[in-house]
Length: 484
Image (tube, one colour):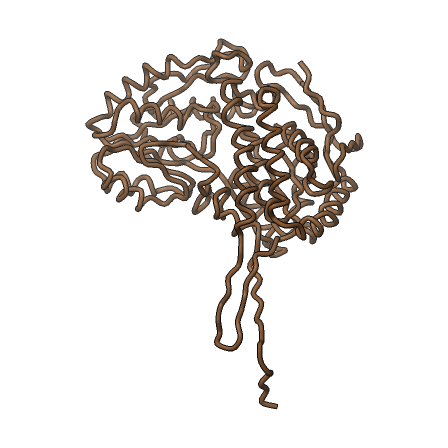
C-alpha cells in the first residue's frame, strides 16, 4: 500500500521538494504501515510559497468575481468526478471508513467551492447619501491568507478555508496537519487543473515551526486555524502581534440535551452520530449527553443495543462503519481517558475495550453513565468514541450545567416541544446549534464557536466578513469648505 505524492509541497503551480527538511512519515491508521514519506518545508520553501502568493494575488483580485467563480466550479466538478479516488486517498490519510469518506469529506469540500463560486459575484458594497456628497463602500480582499488544518477532516478543511479565500480575491498558503498531509496536495493539483493561476493556493508541509513562520510573516493578512484550544491560543497571540485577521475553529465539550418527550430512536441515533462518527474525532461532537431522568434508563438500554451493532473493521471494506483512531498517540490518549473514567466511578454501559482484539488503534464505541459534572470525561475533550451520559431533572438545571464549561462550540436539543426547544437553545452558550438533529454542517450555514472554542465563522455568508474588509470612500461633489 503506497500513497506517495509527487513531492512534499505544491508552490506556484508545481510540485516542489526539498529533502533538507525533516522527514514526515504518513502512517495508514488501518494497519500502522508507512504509506508515504514527506519533508518539512525549509525556510526557502516557505519564502517561495509566500512570495508567489503575494505576486499572484494582485491580478487575481482584479478579476471579475464571476471569473473566479468559474474556476472554483470547475474544481468542484473535478472533485465529484473523481469521488472514489479521492475517498480512497482520504481513507489512507485518516483511517476513516470508505463508506464515510465517500459522502462526508471531499463532497463537502466540493460543496464549499461551488457555494462560494456562486456567492462571490453577489458580494457588493453600499451607498450612503449625505446630501450633496456621498460615501460608498466596497469589500476588498485581505491579501495573502494562511490556512492551518487539522487532522480529522483534512481535505474538507482545506476546501472550507480556500473556497471563500479564493472566491473573494485572496491567495492562500495552506499548511495541513503533519498527521494527514496528503489531501491538500491533491486539492492544489485539482485547482490548477481547473484553471487557477499559479501561486494562489500553495501547500507547505510541516510541524509547529513551519506554522509559526507563516503566521508571523509580515506579508500575511489573515490566519485561519482549525485545531486544539492550546494551539489556537498560541497562533492567535502570534497573529495578534501583527494585527492580522483571524478565524479560530477550536475544540469543544458540547452538550446534547435530551428531554423525556423526545423521540427515543431519533435521540439515540443523534447521540451516536455525535460521539461515534469518525471514531469520535469531530470537534463539534456532543460528548456530554444530558438525558432527563424519566427517559434515562430506556435511552441507555436502546443506546447499548444499537452501539453494540456498530461494525468495526478494515476501513477499506464497504461494510465497516467505524475505523481506527488516527494515530498511536491518539489511541493512548483516548484509552487513558477511559481508564480514568472507570477509576472515578462512572458506570460503563458498553465498550471500553480495544476493538478487534489487539489489532490497530481501534477503540470500541464506549458509553459511560452516571457521569457527574466534575469528572474528567465531562470536562475535557476526549476526541474519541467515548460518550458521557449525565442525567437531569429540570430544564433550568440542564441549561445551567450545559453552560458550565469554558468551551462553546456546539449544542443540541431533542424534544417534541418546539417552544421549549427554541427557549433552551436560546440560552445555550454555543456558536453552532441543532434542534432535533446533530452534526449536520451544510456549507450554506455558518460554523464556529464562542468562548474558548473559537473566533469567527467558517462557511455561509458570514465567511465574507472574515475574508474581506470594508473600504469606505467619501465622494465630495462640491467645493471644499475650509476655515482658513
